[in-house]
Length: 176
Image (cartoon, one colour):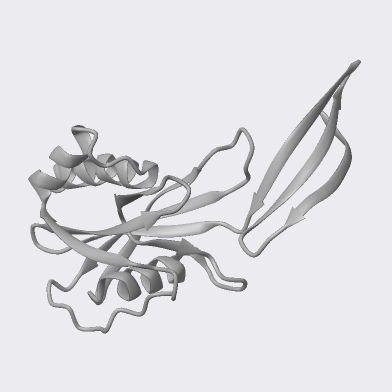
């Protein structure tokens, strides 16, 4: 495959949309590509509790239970993004942060990479939550077993949170 032509269709604050023409031997393919700056998220947990955020997602017209997440700012590394978002959205100070996975959210049309971390946090809320003006977030605490039941029952529908739940369950089983 060889990129033959690329033109910008839309340039936004979070994404850009390109139309690309690719060639492969005698075939020509048109693709619409969403270019994204990347995101990082963290599954915050303390002794036996996971902290999720409930927030309204306009594209879906509903609230979702998710792990804290945010865009990687220019010049920022994914680990700092995960740390910042966890503390801003939950108010729980991060004690330890380590990477669990790196995924492509939807590689058929987007280059977005999501970096997933586990964040061991203090069970005490120590920080004021600093939310963006368009964020309406409620923190929800779940015991580990309840969190895994929510994920396996389909009540958690966010992909990064579902994957984090599977990875976290595996992580806990190896610690025992």
